[in-house]
Image (cartoon, rainbow, N blue to C red):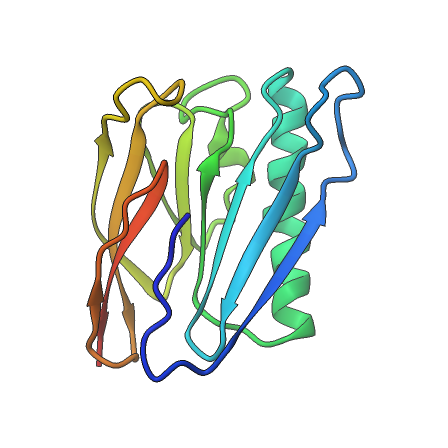
Length: 168
């Protein structure tokens, strides 16, 4: 996920963690990362286990049910976005929706790219973006608005991206 921190710059912090549930046969250790754009939002990303949908669901549940709520308690609540390759599908078995909190908005690319946000974020649009064979799936661009912040507009493109427009 790419995110723009609007001017005036007020600083940022990085919060991260390693999932307690890992596949010992997978050489990649799965982790999550959130950038705290101080007083504006949290932008979080992850790439969940591909070797087991059950393990990916456990990692998703940890991020959305433990790590992010703990972040809100430890620091402060801010609008929060989570996006990444969750290796879980909408309507799949298990279904990615089973780890998305009931009060979160959710969009997906029809595959494994997922975007979730707290209810104080408005999703304007979403679409897949071809990556010209540089990865095993398309990118996913989400355009959104965060209420109550200065009017600024920025567009970002990445494997998982978000275009953000802020409204007063």
